[in-house]
Structures are given as structure tokens and as C-alpha cells.
Image (cartoon, rainbow, N blue to C red):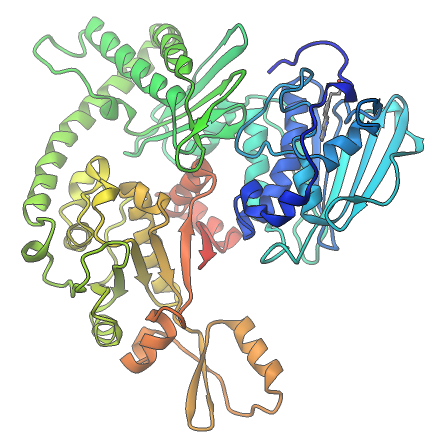
Length: 639
Ligand code: 0RA
């Protein structure tokens, strides 16, 4: 995106207030003080560099996780302005780093707004760090300024030497404040995923990542000349593409820009990912709606014109056409409005018609130019429409068996008494015997138990109609009571905690992954609302006197030993739920107060989707490699 031309100086920054509010209510600025909030600090700094890249002033960004727990972000952009703003008698650097919303991004005339999601400013990072060092190379000189204890300058902005080779750019190194965050250790995989996404969305931008901490793997660089075309290829890499080509178009219109890339695979899932000014719009919005509308229109017209759909045939539905489609729609616009629960839905209505028009015109052209591919797309959609009718019949059969309450519940469900979903919990328990223990251990008032036997169907590989015929899936759908797939209505969910209770071993983890994949694909809002959890049965037990003591994991065992250096009794490694009776299962794993639940979170939807597919798709070798590379495929949050 372009910036207003002309030299930007410290004068253009609109200053609002100091940093105290940030330390008082960090959650207001970065969402949380958990791992998500911690990583927001990095996104905040990187976003500023990416803005420079989008404005055409930056070609390279380096992110380093420092050995001492800090993080440094370096770019070769124009550098934060170093001149003094006469109104405030502060340098641009000092304003950007010590004033809330200081920086032209907010109302200033020199800098275009990047995003609403993390565009809170680098000053917020400063406020939440014990130390921050900023270096700006500008006008041939290297400037440096340091802050401690949440943004207190240790001195003025100083010239410390020459800018090496006359380079321009900004370097920000910060050390997150452990008194603010629950934990301050960055997760390399989380950072890598985000950086890769930035690289895909900014064709040609090079992003280097280095982890200097102990035992970290070698540095990684991302740079995609193909931009979102490469993104789509990457998302489809583990799938079987319907054809090699990627449909692509880019339409600049005055200040706005629409860019779309799409490719189909032989699978059944739809992956449509929207971005606005480089920010993932997980909740969709007008750009996504515009693309869907345009796509449905274009493909139907094309199919009729080519005689692939006859007069007597019904139109193909959007969902038929989008089956097996992987698409990115990335838009740039002047004043993005972010709406929705998590402010991740694009609201600008003008975008709907802009994307729709662009799609109508450009995708039609693409189909004309690529008739072999066009034919394949239509053939696949026609097949999907036939399967849709079959699935509807299967779904209706499921629905008939499950009226919302009481009588129609699956026989295996031991329901709870409470009817208020906000209080109700459903435990999905692996195996009938563990299910029996759970029934005895539960609180019958608000805890329901559904035992699931064996491996449930792998939903990634099965078509919806087949999946819905599976007994375990039917029981699950009926128990939750909110439908499935397109029909799913989260407001009807009978439980606001759906808790997977499976062993800590390989089989347990497989079942957990299968269930999570099912929820992710077929009950997405349930995951988005944060209703899906994993229980954590303890890993160790030992005895203290005559009491048996359970410990959640290795670090709990270490803490226990640190507190009781004379502890002699052995630790048993618990192999499974089956080893615990109900008096043990209740307090360790199920009872609020003494249990630990992990809430399942989806962060970057597109990459989470890929993780799901890599894990569950047909490519066994790649799946194995993925499991080795990524211990946790979907993020979990301790609650
Ligand atoms: C305000 C104005 C200008 C650049 C920046 C801020 C800027 C901020 C950051 C933060 C990290 N890297 C950055 N790069 C640039 C425009 C300056 C000009 O017109 O010369």
C-alpha cells in the first residue's frame, strides 16, 4: 500500500498520552497476559517493519530470539524519525516509544494505517518490557536510545556512530516484563508461522529468523517471489491438486487493491482465507463474501455457456464449487474496519462489491484462458452437488434421532442434570471402562459423560455423508445438540465445555487429534468460541505416608522433589486412565479446582488448517515428519 508522499517528520505524529494505562490494564492493549499476549509484542514490532515494506521502503526484516530471553527486530526501512518535534520537545523516536498512539499511524498524515488488530504501537511493547533498546540508522548516522522498567528513558536519543554503509533502518530489541506476563519465553514455532505468513503476503520481502537460545535449530529465511500464489501452493502441498495451475488476479483500484489466488485439490474441504492489510481476518468479512459471490456466479455462467450444466439442471451452490478449493483473498484498503467478536472480520461494505466485481471479470477471463482447468472445476462441483444431496439425507436421519433434549439422546450418553449450557460440561472419554470410572467420578449435576470406542473415523479423509453414518460421530453430534457442518449452530450447543479425556500415550493422542480435527472441520464455531478443552490426566503418582499423590507432568514432579528433598518413594508413570479408579480420576482430572484443562485455541487459521491437513491427510511420510517437527499441532491454553 502506498503512503502519502513527502518527508515525514516528528511533527506529523499525533500524541495522545503516556504509558501508565498500558501497565495498569495490559489486556486492553494486547488481549491477554498469557502466551498470546506475549507474542503480540513481537507482532507489534514486526507489523511496523511490514508497514514499511508495504509502503515500498523495506526489503528485509530480521527477527532474533536472543539467548537472554529478549527479542530483536531489525528492518531496512526509512527508520523512525529522529528529529525533534517542537510541540512536545521530543524526538520522533521518543514519541513513538513513550506515547500511546504516538506515531503517525494514528491520524498522522505521513503513515498509512496498517491494521486494527495489533496496531497499538511500539510504545505498548516498551510499556510491557523491563528493557528496550531502539537503534535508528538515518541520515548516515546511528541513533540509539534505551528504556527500562516499562518505558523510562535512561537518557536522550544519542548519535552513537555512523550508519554502517549509509544504511537506513530500525532495530528494536525488547525484554518482556515477567511481572506482567504469565510466562516470558517465546515459542519459536509460533513466531515462525507468523513470519511465514507475512512473507507470503508481501511478495519479495525477505524475513530472516534466528533463535539464539540453547538447543534451538538453525536460522530460517522466508522469501516468496510468488506471494499469495506461493501461499496457495504451500497450503495445497500436502494435498493432491486437481491441476497444477493457480488461478490468480490482482486488481488495483485507486487506493484499494484486491489480490486473489486459488487452486483446487481432490479433497472435500474448503479453505478460504482472507487478509486485510496483511492481517488475517479469521472471521471473514466483506472481502470473503465478495469472493464467494463472484465465484459462484462466474462458475455457473461458465458451466452453462459450455453446456456443462444443462437447462434442466439446478445451479451449482457456492459450497459445491468451493469443495476442495484453497483460496487466499488479500485486500488493501485505506481505513479498514475490523468487527466481530475478536475484531477479525472486515466490515468495509465497499469491499464486497469491489472483490465481487474483480472476481466476475478476472476469474471469468482465467476460465476462458484455461478451459481444461475450467472443465475440471465444474466437474468437481457437479460431483459435490450430488454428494451434498446424499449428505442432506444422512444429516436428516441424524437429526431425527436427536431432538434437542431428553428422549433422543444417544444411549451411551450419561447426561447431567443442569440444563444451562454455560454450566454444563461434556466429557468425551476414550473407552467404555474409563467411561465407567468417569461416570462414577463426575458431578452428576453439571458433568455429562460420553464414552467413545476405538478410533473414530478420520474425518479429513472421509466425505461428509460417509462421516455422518459413523455411530461415534452420530452420538457426538446428538449429544452436543447443535447440528453439524453447515447446519452447526453454536447457540444451540448443550455444553459450553466439551472436554476430551484421553490417555497421555500415543493412542490417546491419536484419538485427541481425530476429535480435534472433527471439531475444527465440522463444528468450527465451537472451537472459535473456546468451548473445546482437553483434560490432562496426571502423568505420575507417588506415595506420601499412606496417601497417594498425583503429579501432572515432569515439571510438577521436579517441583514436588524440590520441596521434599527427602522423598524416597518411587514415582509411577501412569500409563492410562484405566489405572485410576473413580476416586482418583475425579480430583486429579475432572473436578474444577484441582484439575487442569487446556483450552484449544486457533490462532492463524490458515496455518492451523495446514497443520490439520498435514497431520490428517494421506501423505504418511509428510505426516510423520510433521509430528516430529511439531510436538503440538494445535495450540493449547492452560485454563
Ligand atoms: C513513523 C514514520 C516513518 C517511519 C516510521 C514511523 C517507522 C517506524 C518503525 C518501527 C519499526 N520500524 C520502523 N520503520 C519506520 C516515516 C519516516 C520517513 O518518512 O522518513
